[in-house]
Length: 159
Image (cartoon, rainbow, N blue to C red):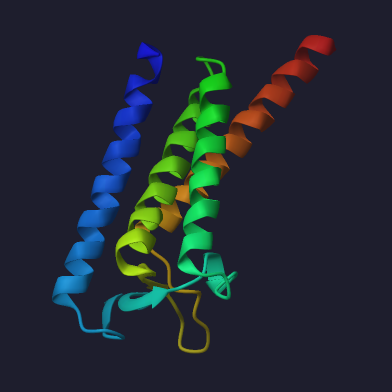
């Protein structure tokens, strides 16, 4: 279990950073306020009652919290069963758990998730998201990367 210590610290750091930034957004920005950072990037305070891209917004808060909790437990199960040398996968699982926990905290306390990152151009804009969502996405990418590396190593051994 000691080998999981750094990953637990990463989970805690992800949750703390996510919640701190969301607190700053909530206390320093008005709802729907937009602050341009770069020509294609802005802070835009809004919220989401569903999951990614407002999917499942018809599910009540308790249902989404239950889904989040099940996902967190499942990802923790996968993380514990992952080989110690699979650092990308373990890091990815830690980011996924940290991001999911950050959004779960929002749902439990606010009944919605605070979103604030907006990528846009004059004619197009991406969905507004938050750091927890980014952690989940990067974490999933790291898990996929680990799987590709494992697949490549297995192919190399077989040939």
